Length: 460
Ligand code: ADP
Ligand code: MG
View 1 (cartoon, rainbow, N blue to C red):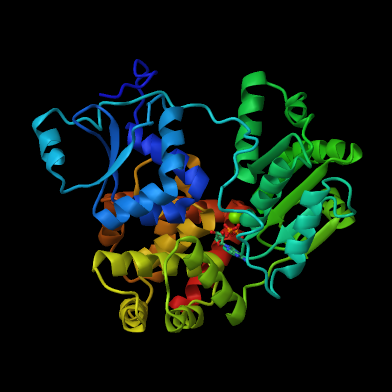
View 2: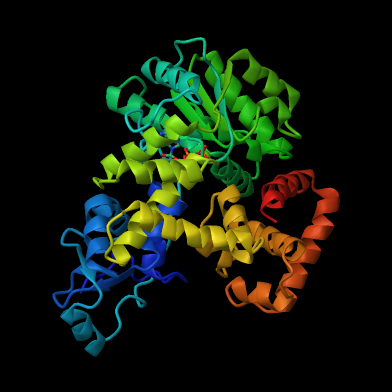
C-alpha cells in the first residue's frame, strides 16, 4: 500500500482531488474535465497506486498522454508513483479491492504551498504546436523574436491581447519554454495575474509591509504575466506591479503580458502603466479563419495520433467558429464520444453529436450553458463552479453564474440550486442579492457581468 510522506498532516481534501488540482495547473481545466472527470485513484493488491478509468480506450489514452504529469503530481504529494498503472474499472481486482478497505479516501495530506514557479511550462504549449494563420501571425512572430533574444528587441514590454481561447496563454508559455530549452534566459517566471495578486496580498499580510515584495522578482530575466486585465480596480497591486515592471525594464529584462482586451480599454488601470505598455509593442490575436481552424484541427489530431476524415475536419471547422479552445473541446468530445460508443469518427457520427448539441441550443439558454460560459470566462472548471469550495476565485464566479441563471433562464430558484451541486434555493437568493448589491459599487464586477451578458444574449 502506498503511503504519503506527509500522511501525518491531515487536510480536508482527498489525495486524488489535490492531485487533480496539480494536473489542472499543467493541462488546463478543459482537458482535465474531459479526460479526468470519471477517474479515481486506487491501489493494486500489491499496494501500488493505480488510476481507475471507465474503459480501455481511456486507460490507454490517459497513460499515453498524461502518465508523466500524473506521476509528478503524485510524487509532489509524497506518493511513489513509479509503478503507476491505469485500469478500466471492470477488471477483476477492483472486486478484490472492494473486499479490502476502501483506500482512496483515507489519504489526506497537507497541501503544498504554491510558490512563484519557474520552468514549469505546459509541455504542449510550444511554438511548434502553435498553428500560424492570418489571425495570429504577427503575435506569433513577435513572441518568437522575444523568446530568441529576451530584452534585446524593441518589443519590451510585449503585450498580446485577444478574446478568450485564442492562444495567449499558449504563446506566453511557448516563450518560456523556448527560452528555457534554448537557454536564452535563465530566470524565467510565468505567473497569472490572479497568482500575482494572491501572492502580493499574502506577502503584505504576513510581512505587514510591501517594501520587499519586488525583491522576489529582482533576479528575473524574463517575466511572463498572463491575463493582466484582472489587475483592473486593484490600485495597490498595480503600484507594486509598476514598481517591479520599471525595475526590470531598466535592467533590460524582458516582460511579456497578455490581456483579454486592448490595454487602454482595461477599466481602472493606472495611466502610467498603460503608457508603459504603449512604449513597447502591443499586438492582438483575432479569431482564426476557416483555413486556420482546419489546420489547427489537423494538427491536434496528428498530435493525438487520431485519424480524422477531411469531411469531419471541415464539418467541425464550419460549426465551431468562436475560438480555438472551443474547437479543441469539440474535437475531444467527438473523439471521446465515438470511442465510448465504439464507433468510427465519421461525418454521420459528428453530425449526430452536433445534432444533439444544436437541438439543445435551440431550447434557449440553459443553466449548464451559463455555467460553462462563466467557468470559461474565469478559467475554472465546471466542477469547481458546481462544487462546495469557498475559495474566493471560485466562489465569486459561482455567485455570478447563479445570478446570471436567475436573470437569463426561466428556471425555478430551486432548480438552479440543484444544478449548483444540490444547493438550497435560499443560497441562490443570497448569491443573487450579493451580486446585485456589489454591482452598485464594484466597477470590475459590473464590467464582468456586462461582458457575460453580451456572451449570453445571442444564445437566449
Ligand atoms: P487564451 O489564453 O487566449 O484564453 P489559450 O492559450 O489557453 O487561450 O488557448 C486555448 C487552447 O487553444 C489551448 O489548448 C491552446 O493550445 C489552443 N490554441 C490556441 N491557439 C492555437 C493555435 N494557433 N494553434 C494551436 N493551438 C492553439
Ligand atoms: Mg489564457
